[in-house]
Image (cartoon, rainbow, N blue to C red; front, side):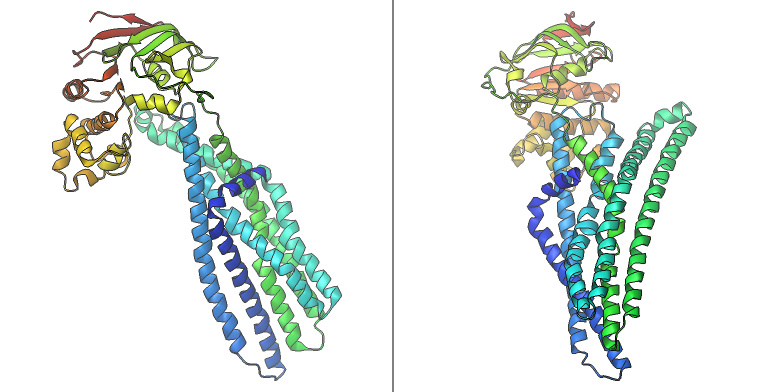
Amino acid sequence: MGPLSRILLLWTPQFLWLAAGVVLSLAALEAGVALMAMSGYAIGAAVAGVLTLPLVLRVFGVSRVVLRYLERVTTHTATFRALADVRVWFFKSLARTGAGGLGFRQAGDVLSRLVGDVEALDGIYLRMVLPLAGAVMLLPGLVLLIAHRSAALATEIGVLFAIAAFVLPWVAMRASVRTGSGLAAEAGALRVAALDALTGLREVRAFAAEGRMLANVQAKEAGLFAAQQAMSGRTALAAAGAFLCAQIAVLAVLIDSGAHPAAAVAAAFLVLAAFEAISGLPRAGALAGHASAAARRVLEAADAPVPVPDPADPAAMPLGCGLRFEAVQFRWSADRPPVFDGLTLEVPEGARVALLGPSGAGKSTLAALALKVVAPRSGQILLGGTDIAFLPAALVRARIGWLGQTTHLFDDTIRANLLLARPEADEVSLWAALDAARIGDLVRGLPDQLETWVGEGGTRFSGGQGRRLALARALLSPAPILILDEPCAGLDAETERSFLETLNESAAGRTVVLITHRLTGVERLDRIFRLSGGKAVAAAG
């Protein structure tokens, strides 16, 4: 229950909503049980020829409807708010531990944890906390009410109720822990397989691998179905046990009916209502294993260590903006070959430097090192003469703007996408950045201008237009250093040349590091280096 306890602690900002939901749930439950008991009494009295006033039934009936409505609104609002808090916290944790992207984590697995596992947590409050609170309230009341007729009967009913409300859910939870872990893992594996097949669909079709990919997805699907079947079996057994306890309790009440028919029928209805109220607890116990596994997976991803932690005693931010790599050695993992082996490279303040090299030469790794996404195994990276190991990552990234080949445009407005670079930017600054990127006229011609939605990944714009929007965002940043990592990948030659001409004009006065595999359209350079064998070699200008 440790992971579930940590998730509950994340819900403390919504305590008032959660507490109000519990209070309304208990009030609605009390009204519903009272309505059933009074209805039974009225039926028994009518059979005995005694007339009863319907006012009490009307009061309990109306109260139950109103309270039930308020309880549903409040508890679901509380759940949505709590899950939103968990998602925001989880996303912040991912951003904290993955400034350079997902790294070696699979996108499908992260998606499964962010969506599927977080959604599995909604049952903690609605299916576990609320019914348990109701069971705790009902047990003493049920025993005391029946004890007026028979102490032995009250004891028997109390034991059966406790078994159905507490013992069976606990047993079901213990039995379903392993099944729940398997269910969460299989759901994640299916998302990974499906996402891999969809994102790589062009390659899959090019190599006629549709059958293999489909077979892999079907195998993961079969694994998920098997885990769901095992979970359903345990849930059914727990529910059957609770149902059996309820029937035995009703039978005991009918056998010990006593002399007064109205009281006997009222007791039977009371028992039925009480056991009905906790009928979902055994199923909740079986699902608790799944919820616990989901919480564990969410916490595992969120608790991943920060790749490059900030220094405990940070140095003062330097005034200069020169960038220098001194004898840098780096490899992504111990079992991989070194990317850099004594790399030394200097980018003077205000210079324009191009880094050339084939795929795998370390061009993007160099950008990751400069942005403190990863740290060198040895050597130094100096910003303005100060080792960035002694500077907070946020301050380093405030000095260095980055534009990559996969720079993302979010499914939001142009304004919102631009403001990621400088949230306090005014309207004049936004248009200046768009004009500098040579896309201002296009945006002015749109009906909604800055409020135009760009679509997921910028799908409402062409590839070149999307890159110009990304360039405008980079230019809006006050960072004096711009690192451009293959910014023209995927563009045709004409669009690429036009884009780089725009860059040459708009980035005036800034230090520019252009990472590319060819020199098309980048004639305005101060230095050119070629990455080879883990080192930077000066090339002919």
